[in-house]
Image: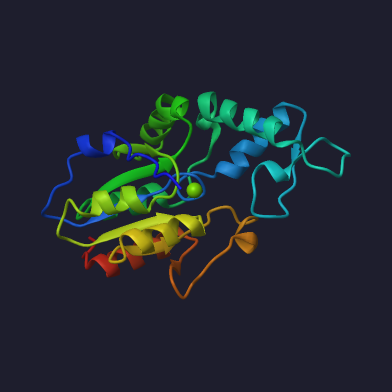
Length: 220
Ligand SMILES: [Mg+2]
């Protein structure tokens, strides 16, 4: 398996060496992606049935029992990313929680998204009071998180909804504190978890408290 190259903007970031680091995913952690995507596919005469932890396999033509094919799903996905993150709602409590953590820690947003998504995604973060540097990656997040964490001697926390990203960080950067969070209440029961390896907190106030404890931050 060939390694995905690290995102170049990762090396341009300033990561102060005198404070801890919090690396946070976007979709289903800061933004209610599935709900926004559901609205978007609805505009295209399709519907989302959330009965598994998946994306394209949840999109149906009304009245049909089989989900749309992967290429139709992928086209909708790319179109949503390119022009429509504006309608994605921010997860309740996320902006306040991160603002609190940012008083004592560096916050970096690490999202896997198509490259065309950058302008819309950067705008979405600013408009939702999430003014943190954005790194757009691809593939498992262990290596980029390890590269970020190596820039400060203080501890790092990583938050994602996807088990394979959390496992990847455990492999590549085992000292990083890992937290799973799944924002959409309908997805929560279907999300693969491993609470013995990665702590899970689906609400931001609880999550922020756990991150602060792990990083030994005293929040005001
Ligand atoms: Mg995500």
